[in-house]
Amino acid sequence: MSHKLYRRSNGEYAFASTQPEWHRLREPVPHPMTAIEALQATGMDQMELVEADADATIITDGQRLTLPMSGYKAIVLHDKQANEYKAIGPVGANRLITQFPDVVEPLDVLIDESGGIIETFGLLEPGGEWFASVRLPEDVTIGGDKHFPYVWATDGLWSAYRCAPVMQRVCCGNTNAAALMEIRQREMAWVYSMMHRPGAKVDVEAIRRMIGLTYKMAAELDEISRIMLDQEYVDTQFHALTDQLFGTPAVDRTTKKVIPASLTKYKARTRKLSSLFNGDSSSLETTWRGGQPTKWTAFQAISEYVDWMAPVRGNVSARRLERTMDSSVQGIKTRALEALL
View 1 (spheres, helix red, strand yellow):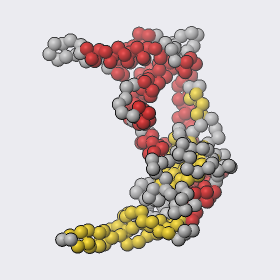
View 2 (view 1 turned 120 degrees about the vertical axis):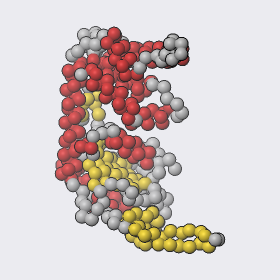
View 3 (view 1 turned 30 degrees about the horizontal axis):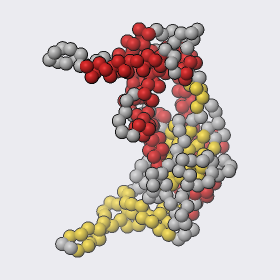
């Protein structure tokens, strides 16, 4: 069950989407969803989180003993429609337990003000964590490429409520984890968080400010791209930049000679990067000006290389997804951009 979505006793998964998803667990909802409609479509409007005493079972000298867990309380998911209970796990005794509508309904305010729609909504196993993807209507253009940004919201018993802009639609446990990795690479100003303490309440105004910052940063990057598109960049400059970012062939400390294996890797990487920079990739054609590569060509060539061509081990597709979110890959892109400005 790689999707990690919660399955109710009637066999239906607590998931709804306006688009066909890779797991094909539910038919798409044929209309845009509000937060309340998303709760209804997933059956979560019939669920509540119930507190109970937290106990621990141990076996000693062949006997089974049940002891109270001091400082904790147990959380149970109650499906009122089926009148079934499912234990989720223990949380701290002071943890504020919020019901799904309390933290989901504020999304409707965000939707009304932005004109966005909920594209996906789901509950993850064992039943204490949910996620939502809100697609915003505005196209954000970065360097000539159009993106349709999402606002991702998630909440769980063992984490804070979070709301942040992401560049992908979250539709399962794996993509929810990938979104979390993505926001961890950002400045805290990009992410709205709410800890579950007594009196805590989702602040829609703070979420709105966070989204505004996203558009501001996107606009700034778009302006940077326009400036870099007007500046030619030649092979020698690009070669020096890639050496700075990726390094040169390693030298044996004893013989002081270049290590052959390192030289082979260096040449292969240089060929691929040079090929991208010199227009062998049709995706970079729009980054040239007057028949010549530009600084924006250099940045896009490096980005395409680290995202799609840099050697990886193991499952190539999965590892490339991880590398896209990985701090080392993002670090290379950031250093490249800083060097080119």
